[in-house]
Amino acid sequence: MRVYRLVGPGELRRQRVTIPEPGPGDVVARVAVALTCGTDLKTIERGHARLKVPGDIGHEWAGRIETVGEGVSHLQPGDRIVAMPTAPCGDCAYCLRGAENLCLHLFEQMALGAYGEYIHIPRHIVNRYTLRIPDHVANLHAAFLEPLACIVHGADLVDLSGERIVVFLGDGSIALLFAQLARLRGAGRVVVIGRHLQRLDLARELGADFVVNAREADPREAVLAITDGLGADTVVECVGRPEAWQQAVSLVSRGGEALMFGGCGEGTIVELDAERVHYDEITLKGGFHYTADSVRRAWELICRGTLTLEPLITDQMSLDQLPEALERVRRREAVKIAIVP
Ligand SMILES: [Zn+2]
Ligand SMILES: [Zn+2]
Image 1 (cartoon, protein in one colour):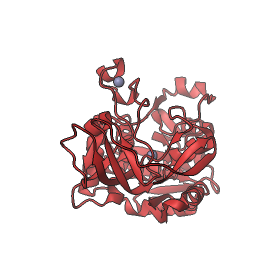
Image 2: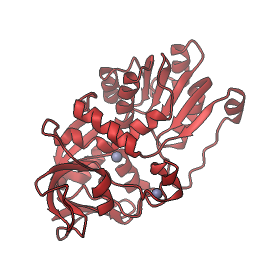
Image 3: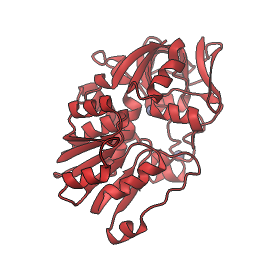
């Protein structure tokens, strides 16, 4: 089979390998569609704090089961499925206190490799996070489960209700999805700050009340103008760069909160305005990954068709065009691209 693997930093290579065989309890699926994701770009460019390089890459996908390992009875070859890239151990100190997204063993054995014709899903993920796709749900929509589960978890960490003014820093697919969810949870006004016209137009189409093009306007001034000089109640940082983290703090109102949703590279140090954090009582939070509950609720949103997902897929390309597809996303010419093997 064909597969793209990350063989070193910045080095994505097309390989021909044998189709994986499922061990006891495992499943091997044929990928029907994989979605490009900002995390993949970051991992290729600068490595990842939690993922191994060299290694498999690609984690947003849907497909059909090809073979099942010994002892798998709840799934069968031919089933349309989606699977999460990780599952918690259920047994470590963090799992026991309900913080499954922080599980000590989360990244030891993953289901990565969606940028290939077949993907291997290890037993613990088969048991917990491999879901059969109902007939009325398209593969393309099901493939949004991972990013959406992360967003549902992130949304639980902040207050999006009660007419609050919520600012999203970033105009990538995460911000565009999160903004929709904020609206759904009752946010009063939703503001998306970005640097790309096409994406900002899309943000407006998907329900943002205000969009700010950071190439043309100063984000802080724009947010102050929208909020009677107070700042945003909640800021959600969806970029994953130190400058954006700093900016997030500058946009929050007194007593407000900032969710750092974009992961920075390993070893990144960010300087923060300590005066604001203390004297203005600003709450800073990190938000990472997903829990069983956020996966379940994200799946409900997808199966009910509550969110508008289609416009986020701006292109479809073949597996052989993957490097070109990722380059297009990197140049911000596309939001997400559907890769069809
Ligand atoms: Zn992703
Ligand atoms: Zn654990």
